Length: 273
Image (cartoon, rainbow, N blue to C red; front, side, top):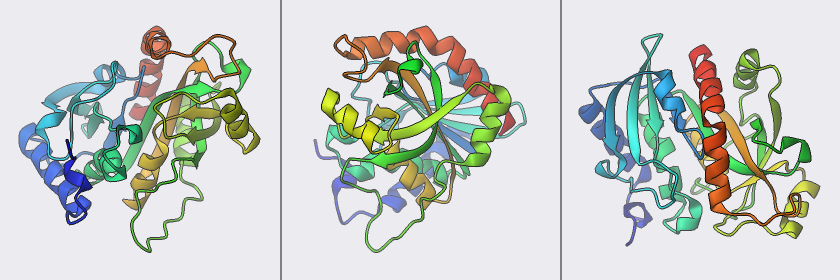
């Protein structure tokens, strides 16, 4: 089925505004202050942030669709934080490999910005290149390399990405856990896992983490003027770094094993932002 946002005659920012208006109407929350996209292993953080005042099936909001991946949620939640501000928790992520176009991939981020959010927290489950990250490490994203050969920016729109992943927000995260490491995230197109040679290429060009999300979303978040915090759960060591074959079941299992720990960590970080 053709995705709404694939129509070149449609303004993606107008659709994002319509989505934000629908969220405000259905949730009763006129403005959200922070938004979170919760990837594999991170979903339970939403339960620890505060009081859920609204939970909407993502498919009920224009531009969103049901998740195509087992282990990913499908709702949009409004949560009242302990400081009386509101968080928008996006449990519906469209991946680039679903072939709906890059507009659909970043629609959630643009919608979050239209709801008023000034901070975008992007999380994912990913493969680690550094052997010391075996066992489900939580890693801050310091920068990214976009290997999708695409961008959410259209036309002569030159957005500076020098400090894309906020040093201020990474410092806040380290106030909660001083042991947090950081690395460069490399987004591949997917959906196949990377080959050992591709992982070595990513390492050679400066990558530490490999995955299939986040980078395109971060670019769109910066375009919309948001401050970005990126975090990866290292669900497995990347191909050729670990000796066993990779599987999605392994990713889900690692996410479940780390869920309580990383959810508490993220909730505490959000509480300080």
